[in-house]
Image 1 (cartoon, rainbow, N blue to C red):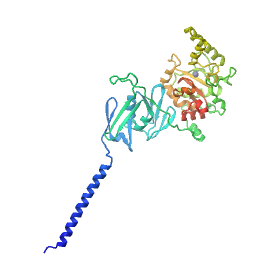
Image 2: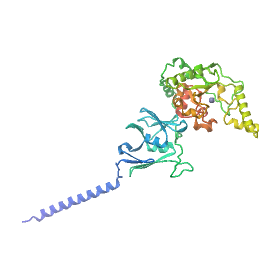
Image 3: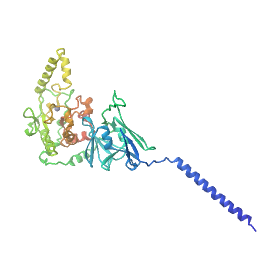
Image 4: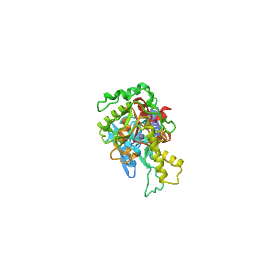
Length: 405
Ligand SMILES: [Zn+2]
């Protein structure tokens, strides 16, 4: 005899199991539909041509990276350095220094944070795409993580056509909040951590003077009088100078300069000399008059005032030349015919960008501070301010006017 009760219980159990199964499948499908799909295919990276990059190289900890070497080639940037420190150089000597496993980038002396660290892998440097989008001017990356596609675009200039594109130069933006106001102890620590290739012990007492005169401001609005001359003045070692005989600097600045040039030579830069140092008021006055006469004879229609305005674009008015302070020098290489921006294309310029502050010197007229200094970019002109001030300016990216403000 069939037990009806048992049969209906078995049927109920079966129905319950099927129901649970159906509900589970429905939930699973729902969860899958709601979860964004992660496409782990290789990335297709579009520069002028397509490159395929492994998913695991492109995405790390959820951050999308790009091969900085490929990017540099596409953007016509120069890559130098080693695995410990890789530098991308743009035109006019602008640079960005990346350190593997660090999220801090040095852009022209300003420390900037990346959203994630750079890393060195497969003989190349990988940097976050988002950082390129925020800090590289003239190039952008469109990131598509559904189709795993990176499209790299360069900004074009006027007159550019798709058949014949004219790209603008790619440079770096260092305006984002710099790391400033380091406690004094950190600056002292930074200075004491400098390492040198040669023995500069005899110069060390000159590198970081406390006298405020080393921070004197001389520019087109803050002039020195005709009677100002630095003291004591001392001749720069003759092996370090070129053109026009002996050159002088204020003594402490001269010693710091010798230390810097000793290290510069040890680093392999022998072909670089001081072409100008202290210039007195009378010299600048005579130079200025010569330029005015030259302008007026080249163009007879010019009035004296017009000629003077023209000369002011390239020469300092007597009293406004920093060279009268005895605290600055102009460098030149023996293959340069004029003192001009070509100095920035010599490797020694890069060495100066990275090391001058260690000897208390600053690049006085940077390319991105023309509005503030009132002077065009002068990659050859270095001013002594002492190690502490130079280190602070190196970290903050400020020019002397900003620093003293
Ligand atoms: Zn100069």
